[in-house]
Length: 166
Image 1: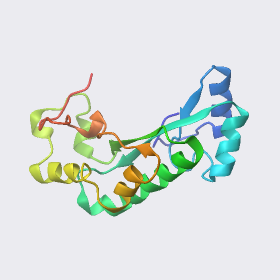
Image 2 (image 1 turned 180 degrees about the horizontal axis):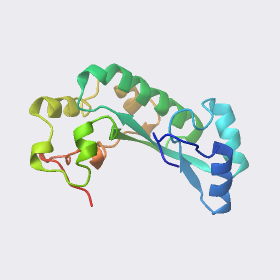
Image 3 (image 1 turned 135 degrees about the horizontal axis):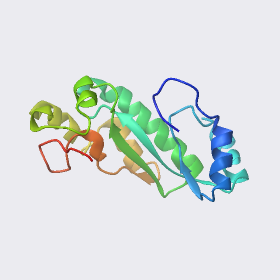
């Protein structure tokens, strides 16, 4: 599965069938709406193939506080689905949107110090470490965990300069 790319994608049932045939024990949720969003339907589809729901990547805009409410809603929606279908050991991985920053897309794999985030953007990122509203509910009340941001964000947990990935 390739996300956020134009063109035909495999239907979720085929993907789950192929995962089962390959011997997988579990799967991530994938893009919201790719698999059924009704937890009862999704649970039935996974159980019929003896697959567990384990995690989900949630694309957010960690460095843009104007998008925080919409991002929180996406995180909470996904957290609730994971909790209801997958149980208490599920994991939400927050990943900065890798598709909408033209500079980062153009420089992918060749990130230089000048491509790093501003201090204001880093301040927005760190707001997620002391989460407001829905993010806090997702972290504290839903039975799963939210780890630190994914390394594709453009900087390490304590580093203020971008990371160039191989």
